[in-house]
Amino acid sequence: METYKKDIPEEYLFLRELEKKNFSKYLRKLANKLAGKTVIFYGAGSYFNTINEYYNLNCLNILGISDIKFNDGNCGKFYKEYKAISPDEIIKVNPDYVLLTTRYCFNLGLSLIHKFSGTKIQVKPLVKKGFFELLNGG
Image (cartoon, rainbow, N blue to C red; front, side):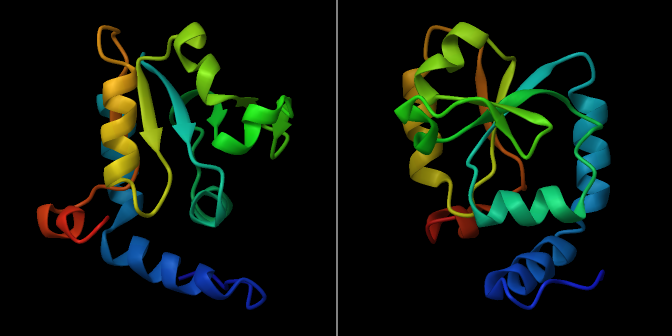
């Protein structure tokens, strides 16, 4: 595992979790599966920060990142490389996938699936979750 920043306490825990899930391998498989598809990440918090810092996400066709904190009109660039998109603008951008980049994504996922019903947009977690992990709030 790469050296983590000790000033971000949860970063070490997130990295351990991602390592246990063999996230690098999963990300390569996901990139192959989503080749030619567009994605928006949803969730611009510390979990996404950790993933973005330690993993190369450029294998995905990323249109931007969305978060409720972008609802105040403070959209622009996020981390310089991603366009910040308010949740209300996702339908206008019309990605193929919204990939959830929050650690606990079950309720958020259900909400977004409902919001995008009747569209082509599919909602999935970026980090694969097991059945029991989802039941426990993941």
